Length: 237
Image (tube, rainbow, N blue to C red; front, side, top):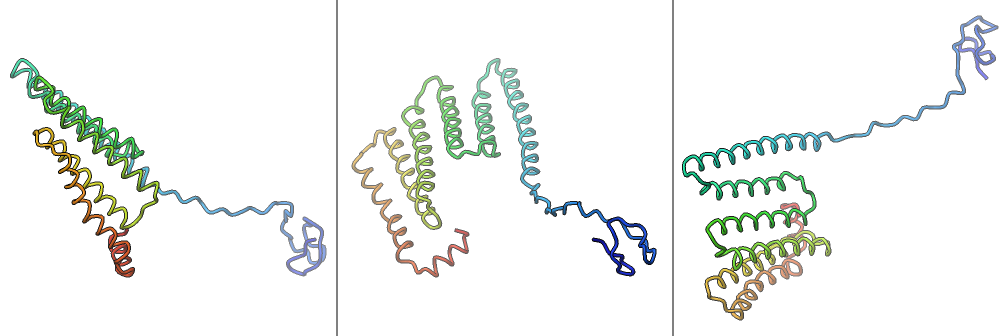
C-alpha cells in the first residue's frame, strides 16, 4: 500500500495523481530487489609493476651481455686468429648471466634455485679448467666443493622448513651450516695439497662446532626472555 506524501491518504499502487489533493505521486516499484553493495576488491599493483620493471632491466642487460660476448669473440679472433682469452671471459660472463636469471626471481622454488646455481658453477669451473688443456683441479677440488655447498644449503633449508624453525634458531642453524661448509672446503683443499688427516679434520670440525652449539644452548635456555624479545624486535626475528 502506498500513501500520498502530502495529505497522507492511502492510495493504490502507482496512482497518479492523489484522488484527494491532486498531488503527483511518484511511481514506486516495489518488486525491485534490493541491490547488495559490494566493496571493490583492493588490488596491489606494486608486484605487477615491479615485475614489469625487472623484466625490462633483465632484457636490457641480456642484450648488453650478448653484444659484449660477440664483441670479445670478434676482437680476440681479429687479434690472435683464434679464440684464446675470450673463451674464459665469455664463459664467466655467461655464467654471471645465468646467476642473474635466478636473482631476478624467474625461478621461485628454492630447491631449483640452489641446484640451478650449482650447475652453472660446475659448468663454469669445468670450462675454466678444461680450457687449460686438461682437468687439473675440477674433479678433486671444485666438483666436491660445489656439490657439498649445494647439499648443505638444501639440507639447511629442508631442516628449517620441516622443523618450523624460527627466530634465533634460524641464525644458530645457519652458523652450524657455515662451520660444516668451511670444514668441508678445508678438507678438500688439504686433500688436494696432499695434507689430509681425517682424524685431525674430524677433531677440528668438532671443536669449531662446540662453541656454536654452546652459544645456541645459552640463547635458548640461559638468556632472559625479555632480552630475547628485545633482540627479536630489534632484528625482526
